[in-house]
Image (tube, rainbow, N blue to C red; front, top):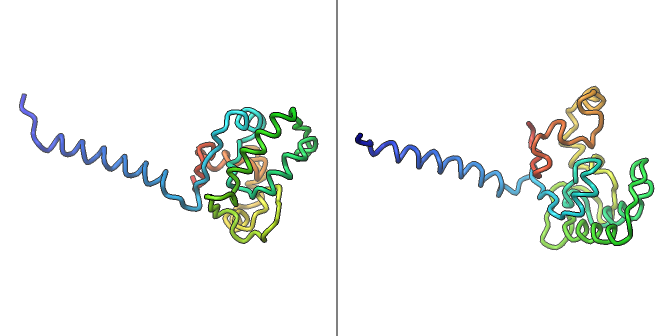
Length: 163
C-alpha cells in the first residue's frame, strides 16, 4: 500500500496545531490563569473542604491573616496543628500574588497593604463577575461565589476563563 505524502504532513500539522493551542493556553499569562496549588500539604488540608485556591489570588498579608484565624474560617473551625499551619502559611506567602516574581492581575485595584480574606471581594473579581445575576449565585448548582468550579470547569488546574 502506497502512502501519499499529504497524510503525514496533515497529521504533523494537526499535532502542531493541538500543541500550539495547549502551550498557548498554559503560557498565556492572561487574566484567566493562576498557577494552581502544587504543595501536597496545602492540597490535602485546603482541598478537603473546597477548591485549593491558587496562592496568587491573594496578597501575602491575606494568607497570613487567614492562616492565623483558622479557628473561625468563614464560620467553620479549620484548625490544624502548628507545624502544618506554618508549612502551609509559608507556601501560600511564598506564592502569593504580591510575592517576588509574581504579578497577579487579580490584585489590580487593591490598595497597598490591604489584606482581604475573600477573593470574591477583590475589585477585579467584582468587575469580572458583575454581569452574573444574583439568582445564579444562589442556585442549587452554584450555592456560593466561592464555588469557582461550578462555572469554571478547569479552576482546579488554574484556568478561570468563562466556560
